Image 1 (tube, one colour):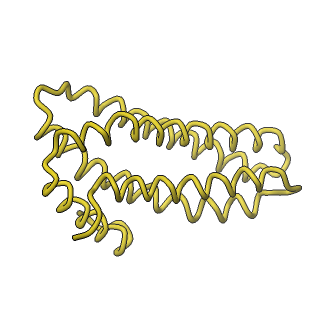
Image 2 (cartoon, helix red, strand yellow; image 1 turned 120 degrees about the vertical axis):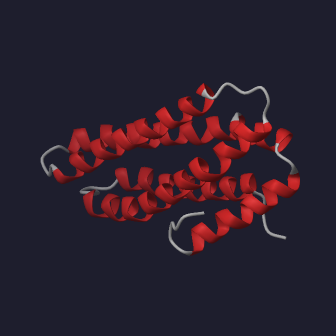
Length: 157
């Protein structure tokens, strides 16, 4: 049996943090644009697949097994995803503007900080809730489905 859904998501979070660490180190270099672009190229497809797993697997499992649960809790995390998208767009724009060194540093720092905060909030709120309320067998099945998404590059779970 593979990892549970929350175990899979946590491992993904750890991988994201490692890339964010690399981004922070890159910001200390002169002309970090190329390296930041490469790191975003690694991070964004994985974030997209990860977000899809949360939306298609985690959220429905929570809504099914946590009773009563206010569905607005999910909305809070969806709004956080939108904020990450906005920070991503701002960072891309700052990277493309070769004359905006300070803007690039600010945009990268904002992106890194927001994403770290979001990962932490999920780990302290959603994941423990799922581990307490969703049956272990269901979390294991969903973990297998999530792992399949990761292997095939973001296909439908």
